[in-house]
Image 1 (tube, helix red, strand yellow):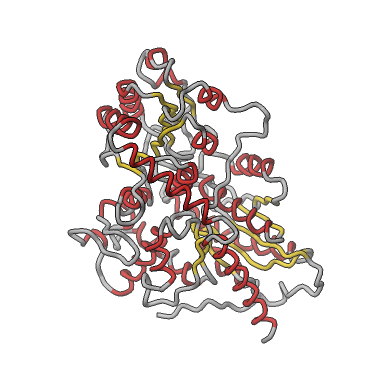
Image 2: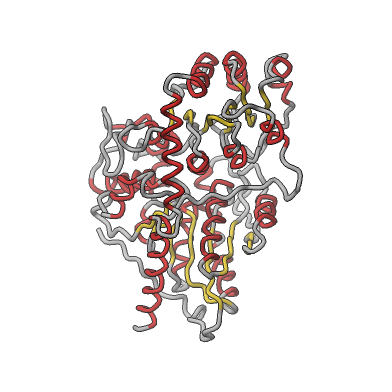
Length: 498
């Protein structure tokens, strides 16, 4: 099946700039969540290093707990050389009660298409917009962006392995009548280790479900684009990257070029200030490599019962810990926009903070994760397996305990602990509705002082070396980005020579 990648130019709107001295620009269009904005900002910096001006565009989302304007303000103050723009607020309905968050996002992105086009047209009056990069959550902007006759690429905010998973699922969708739930044993997809249905996103296992049908409308956009930029590096996901590059995941489609240009990592700053975060000062007082860091992402909150199980496990482990606690009434509702205000002593076991004050610290809602992971006192990381968090741990050389919560994180867990895929830099918590205190205690102890922890640390340090090498001038990620720029120039030349 061949999906066309060319669209007619919007008549009378954008044309090639005639001024040869116009600055080359890139527009990066992102969903508003931190996990999407942060890699886009890193990519914007990379473009700037190669002489482009960069503008990051996003929009308000009614189901996110954080305010987009505030998030953009944090990023803008930390990255003054990048332009940021929030599209005008659009009201697309009185209630979202009956819609799933991805469906709301699609409605908003589609409704914003005209605003997006108008912004790019205005920018084109003063800059030569050479390329548009779309976040995967903005797939409904692909046609609108390419109507401007500008090369349009995707940046996937997840692993190359999950990109391969999605394209394998697209191939399965068009070539058979099977659902993922129909597989009794491990599923063997090109580029991936054997995957169980239980490790796949729940909303994708039944092809008859509304969530599956809605999500699968977005996947073909990947192969309709001019190419895919991936926030990963060769030695981290070699099998998945090779399978994508060779088109093995979607033989029924024309596979566009893929470029592994990561790791792209940018720190989200709470605000610009000289004073260090209190948790960093606390870490300064702890012995080297003795603190386990627990953090579950910008959307990863736990209900009260699970909070108490974590606390009991940490207390009984006798290990030093730094725990970033986000409380949520429903763990599954990651888009809950009314996360309750709380005080630590109201939701933690009575006396917990006093009993653990000499070896533990609990921080509400947020901590400077990159700085924490790079601190010499931190010896391990308990993570929800979000892709940004994984990369941040990799470039800090820290081993992990995997505690996946939602979307693709269970698949990321498989990749982290699979010996044949990566260097096995993590162990996993048993996947269950409630991770009990005994499991928390056992895994924290194993990570920090167990007989296998030394080997896990050695593997984590080896992966750090590979990540560092990938970003050197001659490293594979740097070379991949240079190839992308060469291909982009060839697109421009072929178009102007027609």
